[in-house]
Image: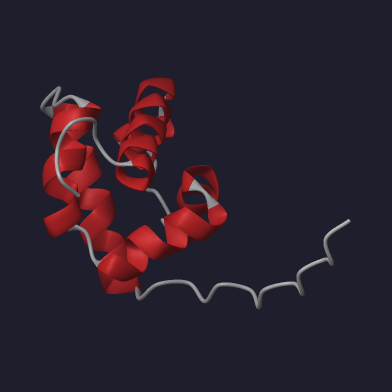
Length: 101
């Protein structure tokens, strides 16, 4: 079989200010009932690249659980918020259909 790849070094968490920006954008979108696709389309230019890279490497749940430090009452702590965040992450990481990346 193929040789095993060496383990990548652990991802360094993004800057807290960048994390806050990303979380605020997501919370606002949830509160405004924005679709994950519509949010994802604009998020690429709004959310710092470090955040997108981090989510790409560790996953959205790890980001929300370990890095985002969500406040009690954040819409991202609800099942609806989680579903939204996962859909956004999927959209951001896989790209949209039919639009040039």
